[in-house]
Each structure stands twice: as structure tokens, then as C-alpha cells.
Length: 157
Image 1 (cartoon, rainbow, N blue to C red):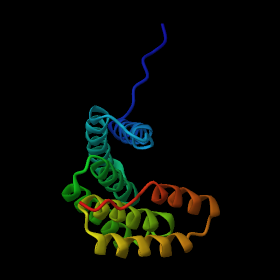
Image 2: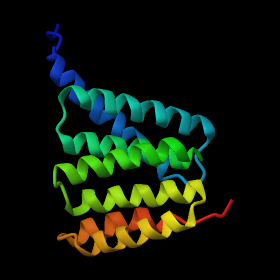
Image 3: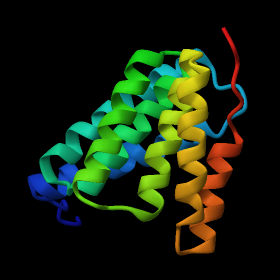
Image 4: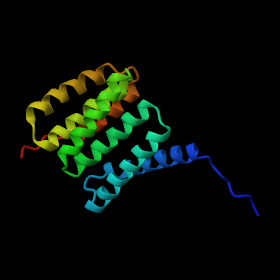
């Protein structure tokens, strides 16, 4: 009988943070995720953020707030979407992470303000996202952020 593999608490937090984060993308990539899928996604996003808060670096926390914001936008919940997108941007700016993480922070705010129906803030962050995408060094990373931005259309309330 094989000996049961044990992991440290830090290894557990990292494993759970990564697995819950990665499980969200298939739901966000759907054209019309169900309300139950989105409900599951928001719970996984918060779980991921919790686990990263125990073992992660600022970049992990920024990305966790990003994914919470994106799920909240998909759910049509602008207030938490804006809150978590702002947290993502603050962490990104305070730690000077830059590159595609900065573009993703702006992109999450673009989604959040589109969800809120705030055209002025939507257009402001859309411009900032496009500028940040242009500054990304790696072409594949540029395409990745642009693909997320391309999923968005402003819908006036």
C-alpha cells in the first residue's frame, strides 16, 4: 500500500488557490454560463483569494481580485465588480507589477463599469486598457488581454 502523500499547510493553500482559480476560466469563457455556474465561480474566486492571502505574493492577490471582479461582472453585480477591480489595480500599481497585469487590471475595470452602465468610466478604462495593452512586451500576452477585452460590449441600462 502506497504511503499517503502529505503536504504542508502552505502547499495546501497554494494548491487550493491555484485549482480554484483555474476552475473559473471555463465558466467565464462560456457565452452564456448558467446562474449556478456563476454562483459556483464566485465562491471559487473568493476561496482562491483566501488561500492566496495565506501564501501568495502581491501579484497573486491582484490576480485573485481580478477574477472576483470578472465573475461579479458576469453576474451583473457592478458594486463588487468595481470594488475588486479597484483592489486589483491598487495592488498592481503599489507594487509596480506592470505589463499584462496592469492591462488586466484596467480591463477588469472596463468590464465592471460596463456592468454598471457607466459609459464615461467605461470609456476611460477602455482607453487605459488599450494603452496598457500597447505597452505589453510579449505579443502573445498582448493577444491574451485583447481577447478578454474583445468579449466586452457596453450595454446601456
